Image 1 (cartoon, rainbow, N blue to C red):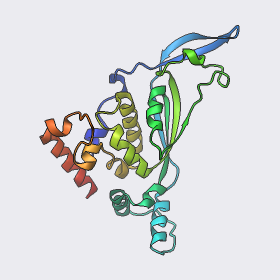
Image 2 (cartoon, rainbow, N blue to C red; image 1 turned 180 degrees about the vertical axis):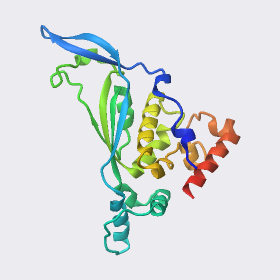
Image 3 (cartoon, one colour; image 1 turned 90 degrees about the vertical axis):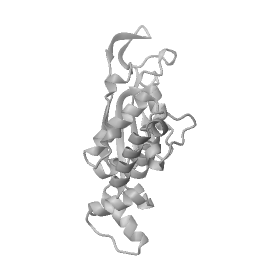
Image 4 (cartoon, rainbow, N blue to C red; image 1 turned 180 degrees about the horizontal axis):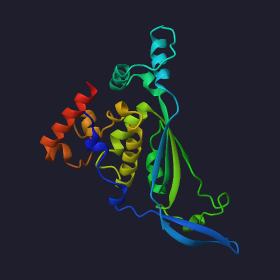
Length: 227
């Protein structure tokens, strides 16, 4: 069982996003646009720490000595389901390239993820437009230093149908990349309605109430994933 029904579906090109990468040059002290090209966002995920750190943190709380090996998938599954504190020892960097500036602002709001965003200051990067000419849709690069627990937390709101569509698609891209190395973790990444069993939004999208048969089916699949 997997939750690919929510993570995978859709592509960035059908979100209506219009992201343009502008090549800027400076002439007579003024920044000018040389050419404008479409920028396709991409995501790179790297694991910074290993499951061994999670295992040894858990063993430390039990007054057990450290070991020098990765834990079993059974241990990983139990830790993901329980969301105990050692899970936060599993850390990743998620690098987003050529994403809209406004999407980086959305992702910066997750306070337990440390963001690093490429500068748009024209006095530092001579190829950038002056501040008063920059748009919220202009592309930037962003790195998130994030642990496994926060990935689950971010997924609860960024995989939600009420999330801004471009930011939602970017997070789906991140989950597709993470799926290549951490499938057990990604299968626990679902929107809030599946995580909590109901929609907590002030203005729901209607998925959990208008299509209860499909919602219950997906909720049952999610529950089986964690068993």
